[in-house]
Image (tube, helix red, strand yellow):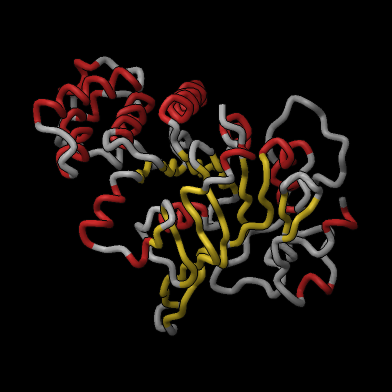
Length: 332
């Protein structure tokens, strides 16, 4: 397996200072205002690398994934794919790039057309991009179904004839149909039974290795991210608050929010580290975020200095990590 260190030398996807605002109305007769779902995020994904994006619901993970795929346009900042700025590309050139980047949705049933056979839906990408004739597409569909652990004869079935885990395998086959280099998996196992989750995660790990995929894996399940990913980006209220090698972050989380997330994860080992207290309170509204550090209203280590300015991501620990916390050296 290509190491994360080697992979990082050749970034495939780069996000620089990316923000995304949505216009929303406050109250029935209130004014419309911009709500920042993603705030000044820097992120790179190297070829053959898996990057986990974790955080609570509403922290901006899925929005970031769609920004990386150019399904949403950033309000500010730049997203580059294979060295090309996506906002500057249009028409046929963007269409050509689109086949190299794919999305696996959270809900496999909702992402499939219930009226069409799964074989036809898997073949769509090949036919739209002119990658195969109809006869060739049928052969490739059979191969893809076999590759994801399904019977090729099931290509003639409708989505409702599959279990949840099987439908997600169909969705993975559809994402692979165009031969992508980059895949965003948006909580692809959260809608599945626990007994099926491990099978799908192992399938994604095998496919990433065999096909050389770059993968962004969005999840709130830290156990899955630890198993699958080379690096992790922890998001809170639209910002990345800690990023670095997965092994380093899970062994010794630095940001108070990362510590709290790990403390909230079920474990068979009794924790004695009081600095890893579970999260308290609610996620603040993105429409009215706290001043300074967004996590300070829930942080047991917060001081008045934490309200004065947004802490930048800075190198910490000498192991490739970056942490956005003014007190990280004191509480470490």
